[in-house]
Structure formats: structure tokens, C-alpha cells
Length: 391
Image 1 (cartoon, helix red, strand yellow):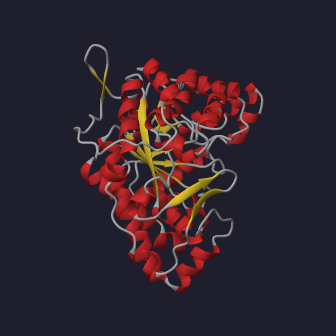
Image 2 (image 1 turned 180 degrees about the vertical axis):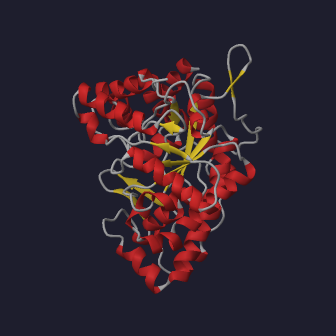
């Protein structure tokens, strides 16, 4: 299959000749080895809160700009949407870090905005600018939104995920993800990336019912999108509410957490054994609130001490009446990968010791930087794979 993928890359059309509606049966959640035995990947077991033989590891944004193969691929497929929406290209990009570094997770190469056209919202991703959307600021704009039909609107996601499940080893977890309503709403209301988020905050305080309508519409479709990914091979779903860290605690409780929970509850109702992870950048003030959503794993950014973070996750779950201490992901500062090998090893092992042997998925505290040397990324993964907790 790997040789077939490489061959398809040479012949795949640049035009968006996407797949037709998928009608195949759901992909089993467990993997199967060469002997026909079922395999529960290491990363999935850790995300469920189990004590594992070693710490699983992957990196947010592991597929992309820091890899020379990816930059070469960009010459043939110059737009992000081509690279993420042509299945054979998206498969190749997703596999590059897994193949090069032996990460325990292989994440779908996509974008949090990918499902938007299926909701009636068009977007573009411009190089050096980022996502661009026609601003949504009136009830007329909101009324044009509709519920997504993933099999019709984004079938390329299913094809990519199904192929990844065929390509990776049984010990590897295939990871899916969705953006959260508040973060997607920032793009819809602002029209592009922002530093201050003044337009969406103005809407929150002047027309809160309008913002709640946008958030509710997004949550309904994003929940369906998450289920679609699971049914087509994703064994874990990470939800990203990257810009919710700009909210006060009160506004997080009103405009972010309820809509995160809508997605999580939909996943847990239909697929209770599929682990979920939440990540918010600059979320140090929100950890207990994140844990209270009943997400399985809280992904910490690098500004939080791992030992303190674990305590706060457990406290947040206990206060919400939830069982168990909860899992944790992270949280190496991505800039550490710019340092020497000794520093990478020291900092990574310190985090793993503080996290303990149960329910920890090692990762960065944010996405890997584009300027990161590939040999440093490889050494980080190797360090984590070789680490063992003292018995």
C-alpha cells in the first residue's frame, strides 16, 4: 500500500476531483495484526487512563512544514486545501512524521475549518495570511448555515482515514480532530485570524443571542463530523478550542464550555470507548474547567507544571462529580526542540516523571514550530520511546 500511495502521488490530479459519497460499513475501533488478533494501540490505552508499558508520544502539527518532504510536496500542490482534501496527498502528508519518527499516533492531516463548507460557510487558507472567511455578523448570515452531511460534503476525510488505518501498524493509533465552536466562531465573526478578538467579544456583549446561535449551529455539525471521523477509522478525537484561552473564566463558562460539552457528549453517547482530548492554548487559568467537561484527557500547554496540572485536572473532575483523576497530554515547550539533545532529553524526561506511569500521552505544549530541525524532532520521539518509569 505504501508503494501504491507513492505512485498515486505522482499521478493525482491537482484539480479537486474528490471522492463520491461513502457507503461502506464503519471501521472497527480495534486494530488487527497479521495473525488476526485484535490490538488496542498503546496511545489509546494510555488515553483511557491505563498504566502502560511505556509512555506513548506524538506531536501536535507533526505533519507539515518542518518536514522537507512536505515542503517538496507543496511545490506540486501549492494550496493547503489541495494538500488536505485530495485523499492520496493527505494520506502521504499524514504518514510522513509517523514513517520518519515512529510516533505512536498518526493524525489526520486536515484543518479545523475543513467542515465549514458543509455548513454553508466557504473559506480559503491563504499562505502567510491564514484562514479567510466572509465575516458572519447578522441573523441573515446565521440563517444561511445548515447541518453538515459529512458523507456528501467531505467524503475525502473518510477516504483519508480509512487508508491511514490500512497503512499504519496495528500498534499505531489513527487520530482525528475537530475544532470547537468558539474557536471556529472567532474566524466566522472576525473574518480571519486575530490578535485581540474584538469583533467576537463585541458580539458576545452586545448580541449574545446571535453568538449563541452561531455556536449552537457549529456544535451540532461538529458533533456529527466527529462521529463521522470515528466511523471511518479515527480511534481518538482531539477537540481544539485554541482561542478560548482569551476568554475570562465567566465568559468561558458561557461561550466555550457548554459547546465543547455538546460535542463530547455526542461522542460519549454513541462511542463511549473512544477517548477524547481537549487542547486550549494559554489555558493555565482554565484547567479545572476543561476537566469538568468530562473529557478523557486534558492536553496541557507548556506554561503549566505537569505535576501541578495533574493535580488540578483531578480536582476539577472531583468538583464536577466525575470519577477518576483523568488523563493528561503534553507538555514540552515546542521551542525546546530548537535546543541541543541533552536539553531535549532532560526536559522531556522531567515531564514524563512528573506525569507518572498512568494515563499520560507525551506531546508538545503546542504545535511543532516550522523551523524545528527534523533530527531534533526525531530525537525527542526516540527519547520518549526509550524512557521507562522506575518500578
